[in-house]
Image (tube, rainbow, N blue to C red; front, side, top):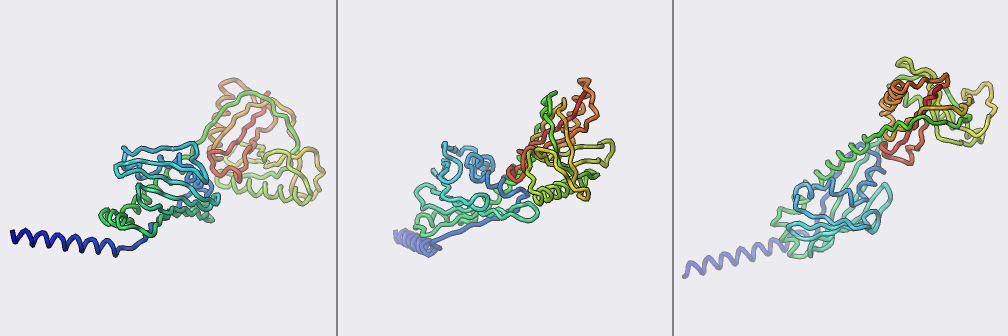
Length: 337
């Protein structure tokens, strides 16, 4: 009986000691993880601000197949939310503020515990990648929350690995998304024609993008100095595609013929109203060789003969307005007899 009293007293001392230990734990916590992702800032922002995408890259969902998610109609942008339920309880996440493409502020409520502040910072880098920083913090934590946290190994141990894995999955999904492309043979149609200012150069697969950029930049500068308005999307006319070094004219459409000074490196030309085979590529420009291959194959299989007019591309979307390369649209036109 005496031994039992000592045991009970020892247990009481341990309980009191453990309670004191819990009580003196910090009343706040903060966990932060950062990952550099080779994707435009806007593409990542669009993924994070839409809770409907979270199921695809959440480490918590990956580790608990029994977790159920509820995505309401309002799940994008400020005021958007989602909720989940797992073996530990029910939680909700709500977006409370956003600075498009730069930062997102959210609020997380789990079970009966105090709300936590969640923030995202998207820092665009010069190489086109983005540093994604994900942070969660809480303060004025009650005893029960500190007890739960301590028993689970601390918030850093609970949340840190999930943040790391989630950012890794977000990276992978975004990379896959940006690689998506679609080639559509639209068939035989007519192209209305028109004037365009242009610069001609030769290029190979390694420098073609850079040379296009230089030519379009020079044309835009010429147009700006002479108060000339653009009447259509940029295009490239392929004067010779018979070798690895192509000869191309990069141009910008204008409404009417313009007198260009003889000493200017910019010229003007005209595409007539012509019959063409049209192909549409939706996706990164790096997929253009595949689109051209599909176009030429269609020509051959359908006994379509090219005319003497040169084939050309029109870049229907401005990458500045469409940060995800998977959304870029290029139209290929091959004049036929």
